[in-house]
Image (cartoon, rainbow, N blue to C red; front, top):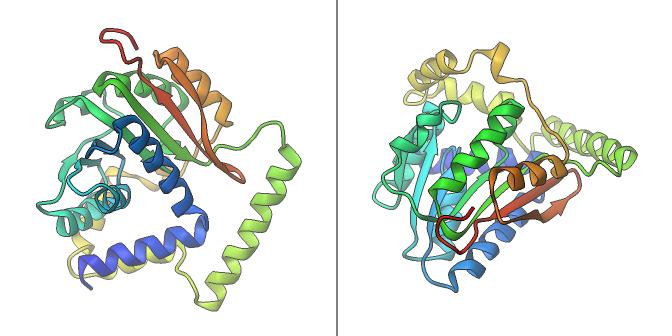
Length: 255
């Protein structure tokens, strides 16, 4: 199976879990367009996996300069094969503050990430926000789209999650979509990705990698403000998912 087919299968697997996935990407890129006045942006796709956000950024902004940063060897292999010559690929661990030293440059117009940071513990996410601020240019933005429920709607949020789960299971049962677990099983059986799966299992032991932490969006908004962002708020919401945004001050030397 070619890398492009793996990109497509990843998108389909993710879309089955998040039917409004493209809407969050569109909202993120609209915000990028707003702060760059239409010029080709310089973007960091943080914890970017196979380069999902990067592909959409390049599609919307021809000439954009994009860096994909991730640690997953399977997803990086797909990104490297499909984005060669179009984006810079960086292998780095966001759990280590030294990740910034691996970037080829800084002064990004935007740092974008989606459904990735919930793998990190609370204290690391809060610290990471401050590190992200430092690689942004004055006036740049950071957007994190993830499972960020609305704390004032606990009953509805529970029902939305339950109904979403029911629909996903129905898709999996009918064969209309591949589940998360099945996608990784197929990757393990692939001639080229199989060896990368062995590397992945060493990096992400099952016991530690599946401990998701999904606080309300307001927690992230507050953490962005504490980290030094001049403005922070909710950019987009879809059910129990949301995208929070932080704006760095346009003045040099000020968060």
